[in-house]
Structures are given as structure tokens and as C-alpha cells.
Image (cartoon, rainbow, N blue to C red; front, side, top):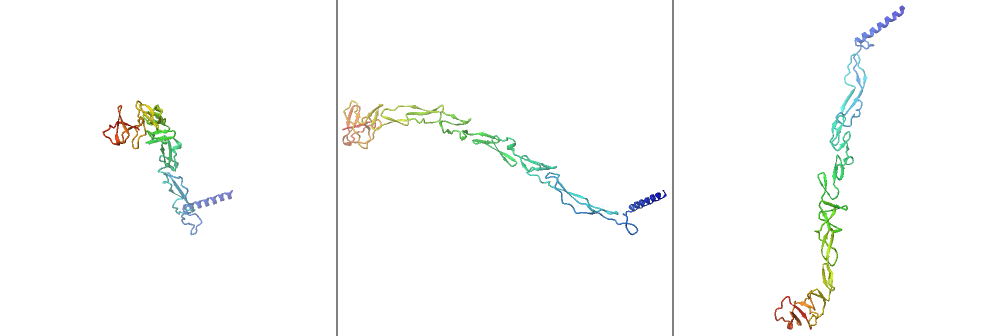
Length: 315
């Protein structure tokens, strides 16, 4: 029992001695009267910078750290810190975006954390009347063929028929009595004011009626042929007062026999029995003046003959 008490006393003395050493600033074990010298801390080298915590925005930051290789002791000092930081990626917004905490605020037409992605307006909505073309950060609208772009709208300013464009006033290639008209831009419109040809001989005064070209039929004499819009006398015939006569036929009530006129004398379209308009003086030519016949002698005109006179070349 006595030995146990002695041991307790010894332990108490040792603890008290240790506490006194601490109060006096000594870590124990020093020479020279039992004191110690102050020791400052020492740091390791800085680590590499960490990855930035944000790809863009206003709060990007990265850090580096270090640790103590020697602890301060006996009243020594320790300056500095174990960590360091700096800003990063704070000007990384793309396509005009503005930095906000942790990301970017994007302009219209762009999306993504850092505004790096284009918004395809054409696939996400239908912003155009006809054709939508996506471009970086925006889109453009295009009109179908035959349409004119006016602001944001497409207006049909010409005809679009059968997939083809026609200007106002253009005539239907398949119907000469139809044309392209304003306010009827998708169909051909009948137009009775258009000129046309029904492609028929023996018709005249062709005109458009309800989208169809129609002409007025006419009939030629048996000695005539239809030539476009008129009758043409066949060779060897004359037409007088609506009747056909062959060259050489006798004039009714006259006994003079007709012959072919001499060269240089023009033939009238309406000649009867080779009746001729005066175009030159020639012997053997006679003038019909009512029912009388006057000889022009030896090719010399002895008197003025009216321009309307007709003559007959006879034997």
C-alpha cells in the first residue's frame, strides 16, 4: 500500500514537470539548462492548378494546395496558407453571350451552357410562310417560285399554273383565248378581247368566245379556192358579178371573139372575156363605151381614155 502511494507521487511529479516545460516554451530535451529554440514551419511546393469549376460564366475558379513539411515549434511562426485560388473561364461565353454565375445568358438563336450551339428555328417551329433556311444564330425565309417576298410575307404577283410561272397578260400556250390575269393567278382566264385564229380556211373574222376561237364561215365560187380569209380565182377564170367565166368566153350579146392580151398589158382581177384595165396603148385593142366599140388605131391614143375604161383585145 505504501509502494503504491509512492508511485502515484512520482507520476504527479513527472506530469507537473512536463506542464512546466510547456509553459516555459520548451519542447523538452534541449541542452543548456533544459531550454529549446523556436522553429518556424516549412511548406511543400504548390500543387498544379485544379480544373476550372465552370466552363464559362462569372464564377469560374481553380485552386492549388500545399502542405507543411515542418511544423512550427517552441514559439516559431508559420506564414502563408495551404490553399490558393484564381478566376478562370470568365470570358468564355460564345456568340455574344453574357456571363452569369455558372453559365452564360445567350442571345436569341443560340443555346447551351456557354451559348455554343445554334438553335435550328426551322426544325423547332414554322416561322416562314413558305421555305425556311437555317443560318448560324438565325434563319431566313424564302418564297416559292412565282411569289414575291414583301417583308415577312410572300405574295403571288404572277400566275403559277401547272408548276410554271407566267406574267400577267401571258397567253395560255395551249389556248389562244385564255391569259394570265391578276386575282386569278392559279388558273387560266377566258379573255374574249384576245385575237385568235381558228386555223380553218374559209372562215373569217375569227374571235374568242368563252375560251374558244370561232370564225365566220364563207363559201367561194366553183372557180375559186379558199386562201386564208379570202377567195382566190383559179388560173384561167374570171369572176364578173358573182359568176365564173373561162378565158375566151364570148361576152353576152357581142360577136367579138376574145384573145389573150399582148405582153405588157395588166390583167384585171375582175376581167370578163379578157377585159383589161388600160395600162399601155397597143393596136388591136378596143374600148367598150356602153354598147359601142371605138378602135385605137396603130397603137396611138387619139383621145384621152378614162381610167375606169375597160378594153377587149380582139381579132
